[in-house]
Image 1 (cartoon, one colour):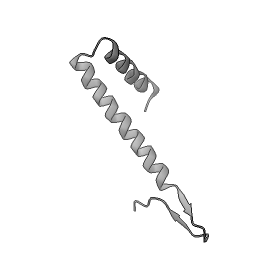
Image 2 (cartoon, rainbow, N blue to C red; image 1 turned 120 degrees about the vertical axis):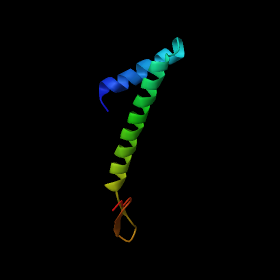
Image 3 (cartoon, rainbow, N blue to C red; image 1 turned 180 degrees about the vertical axis):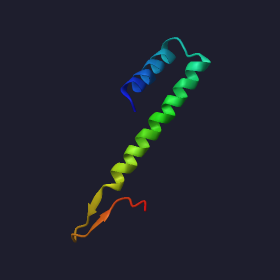
Image 4 (cartoon, helix red, strand yellow; image 1 turned 30 degrees about the horizontal axis):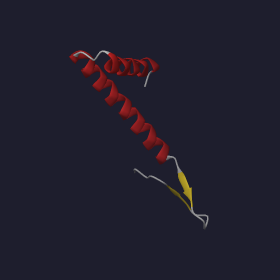
Length: 67
């Protein structure tokens, strides 16, 4: 996610705590949050797909195999 979008999420969070958000800002915040969570999930899945577990007997297997 772009740095500007993360900054906008933080701006909306601050405004929500201080003065409240308009309906348009609530919708924008929700869309940005969904995009952010999708990016975090994709990153985590990618990391898990590239993680190999080495067992005590020396065998190796992928932690997550989404074939």
